[in-house]
Image (cartoon, rainbow, N blue to C red; front, top):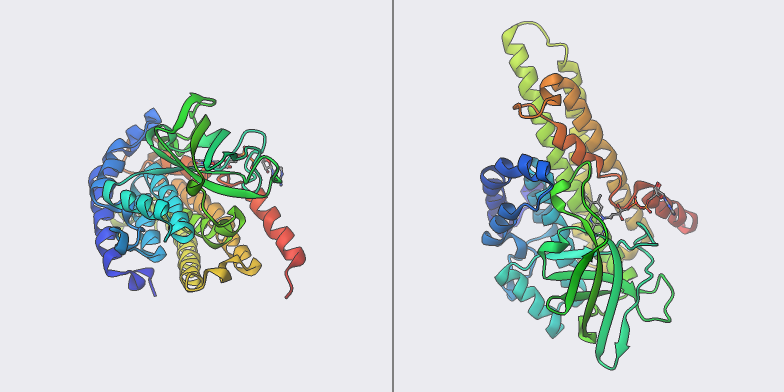
Length: 391
Ligand SMILES: Cc1cc2nc3c(=O)[nH]c(=O)nc-3n(C[C@H](O)[C@H](O)[C@H](O)COP(=O)(O)OP(=O)(O)OC[C@H]3O[C@@H](n4cnc5c(N)ncnc54)[C@H](O)[C@@H]3O)c2cc1C
């Protein structure tokens, strides 16, 4: 049964809003956002206006009270129209989910969640670090303390939409003496945050609108800005599963869009020669089969995680982490294969920019899927868990 049957009443309204702004705002701007590698201002403004940025904030704090199922469906819908805008939405929701699960009930984080809901504050993430690469489970930078005051400096080599936010969740070592893997998550915000010294540019193959520039990040604050749970726990229970689910969901949207174009082309060819099977129809059957498999994987992942969310400690089990990692590994590979297969069906019309069958942007965007936390690292993670996991 489709995930739509599990959507919450609030989620249904947000999904309708996402469909509307997807068609009216994201799609018309997507090619320009891609060509100019510019931030999709209009998309984020529309999401803010529709309350989508606060969708996952609990209703008691003024938010939409959405479920992960709702987020997944919204990501897929946005992904059909603009991969970069959908990725910005997904990355923001991952940060919100971490704050909800690990910070809720604490005055500092309740106030922050209320502000996300009421003012539509957009939150970025600074995990990747110069000298560490994509190893999210280690940090070089550390929180420094002066009584209740803290400070933090990080060579953050990739912060998506960092130039357009006031808030960033940063991973760092707990203190100067902590091991690289003894990490915490700190919420930092302007004006006590500077991201002025750009250390990289963002002129990439795909996901160009995410504007994922590198910065030297410097922030000051107070100890109540540190999420109380260790990063390892927040990662296992929330960040890793919500990341893999929202990303896989938006990649599904990109793949759905590509297959829709391929179907349209094959049907047009079939209409021209009634009674004759167009040569590309068999390839269409293949990509539709692949798409259904991806949809089934996403739906299964979402349903399993919804069950786990009733007792988040289950989310820390190795078996569940392996399952979520496999969702990312499979979908990231399949989405690229589906878009590539659709391009082959659309042929030159898909290869050319500016036609109704163009698939260049979707193909390039889908190539980022295996690199966003590199699949090799995720495979290594699963490999080491499998060595210690009992049957
Ligand atoms: C569109 C986009 C948006 C992003 N946004 C953000 C963001 O907002 N915030 C953020 O913090 N990060 C972000 N990232 C970074 C992302 O999450 C990854 O950390 C980053 O893409 C990894 O870069 P890498 O491939 O150079 O590094 P690595 O993961 O270090 O991979 C480099 C090479 O090392 C190899 N390798 C594999 N396993 C290992 C291992 N165990 N040890 C050493 N090397 C290994 C890989 O095979 C690969 O060839 C973003 C990335 C993209 C593409």
